[in-house]
Image (cartoon, rainbow, N blue to C red; front, side, top):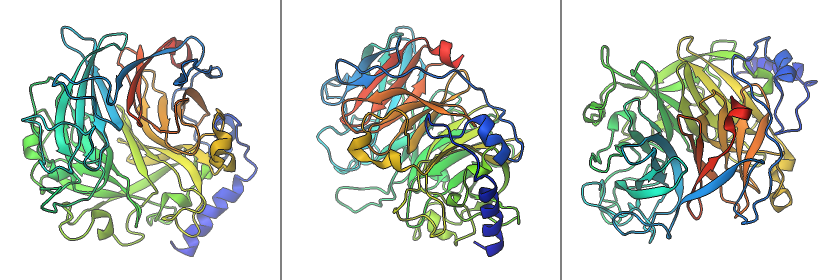
Length: 482
């Protein structure tokens, strides 16, 4: 990073030194953030604060008054239609409309990275890699309008570390492998690090890698409204990962048949994001940016990936420092009509893989606007020692850190799942505004994963990753979010 660019960014940060931070969620409120955001008012919806959480007598999930939960699945206890136990390590999840006999269908990742007695069973027709070390995959869960489990089955198996992903406009799920492992001839018979498409009808399965989207430590993705681009995040380090865009060939639109074309590693174009500073050069890492840049649009450039299948060199290592914008833990991605959100979970004090003169933070949420082709920092969790106190902060519902998965509610606000220190929360957030806890894990310190709202706004589904529990939360959502 050049001295001039450092001076520009540090000057902006110094100009915001007097900006106060809200105590709730340790995030700047819209009014407080505006002076440091170059006068850009938030175009995003706001909502009412959620009331304080009430502890659960059962010791599982603290919720606001008027809300309740139901356990949908639990690893090792509920059963698949095949008779196998529900797999463990629930992660990215999407909810779709059900069929004649159910209200909703969930398609759910299981982030299993090695052989596991509660791995996804290799049901015939669903298997990508028959190696014993490929125990990840996805299950499909049929539920009624109250979240009751009506049946669960395997959508894909034989994959590894299925972290997050994204729904398609035609009603399927794209699951992402967060790994770069190659075949080893024993536990892994095929290369991994791909995206796969998963169907929820219980009949269709095409367990083939979508090589056009690259082979790297995928986290999540979103397809844009015109079906010509896919935006993908990378959770990796040494060096940090990036944010990617796949573009279709001219005249091509993604559809339910595109899985055939996307198997070709040379189909379309894959590029990495470069956020441009005031001098027009790429900002090397998002850790150079702070709340001083909140709501400010940055121009971007997209830099082509040379070898997206990473034949000899990892995709992120094919770029020199300063050629693209890297970030610690590019995580959740969620698309809207106008753009796509992407999360950087944290850059904590004392951690590796942040620039020596970078600025630690507890989380960033970005919004990339399709039309203007600009990106904005819309939510920022500043470095906060109180969020890193471990067991001392176990029941602290005001100091948040490490947002991971993200979803957009039917009302346009955000729901975030924490993967940080001490107690884990599900958070409600508005870009440019504060965050509020809407659930707390009382069972253990495991992260929440896969928050997803039913389209009718009645049910929020979310997972406690370990031991693997899916929960359906109902209540007066419209009173706070509508």
